[in-house]
Image (cartoon, rainbow, N blue to C red; front, side):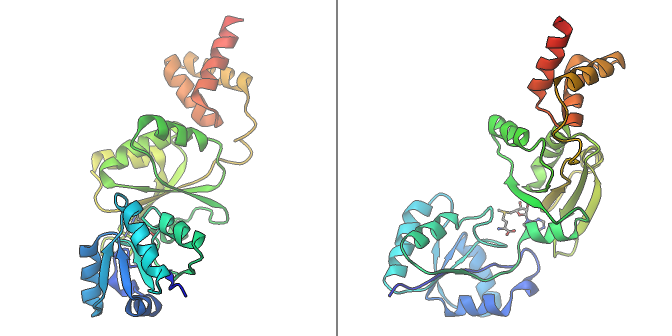
Length: 279
Ligand code: SAM
């Protein structure tokens, strides 16, 4: 009989958020697979739990995933933890879950802390339909493609971001969705300096340019207005570019602004403006 894999969420800042079931799952596992064994050791010391640990993270997951699977298949039970929050959500775990599921190992999860859901719930933005977008890529090309794919997105969007990349990301979001799009920046959740800043993308970018951001952030961005998102076409785009250039904007800035306002890709707006100008 194989053992089990149990995903165990850990606090995202406040140690009081470890649940009785999470503690029990850690206590009863034969071993714990941890993203960073030093971080998990601190938590286990706090809980007074002694347990054998194995490291499982992005760069050893192929090799360690197989070792963990073999131990579970031999009958041991494994608790999987990340540094903070829910394993497998922008954290290691997704591959191990798949590997175990494909090998007939029972996989279960203890529900618990997750920065994305905590932030969404206090954002004051619509929660009925949302999409989780994780971290934007560091590579310019895939970052641009990711953002382009979200132009017409009407659901509330959730992003994770590191503080040193926040200002750039706010500018990129503002270029894509328009500066007046509402955003709730949820910082240091469950910690002493927890804060929710409900504002617009342009104001958030200006604010954090003046006051360098510190701590951990989840960005909750309002979706596009359903009525305005899908309807605009090339003629609308060209007309708006004409208006904006008549107001003194360069063609480049006019295209950027029109694309953001109409929820269209920048290159489509640019082409539409060129076609009309050529007629
Ligand atoms: N698996 C984790 C979860 O369930 O929340 C997320 C891990 S991901 C590597 C780390 C990111 O989560 C951070 O960069 C930040 O965007 C967000 N995050 C984690 N803890 C947070 C907190 N206390 N306050 C705000 N954001 C947090």
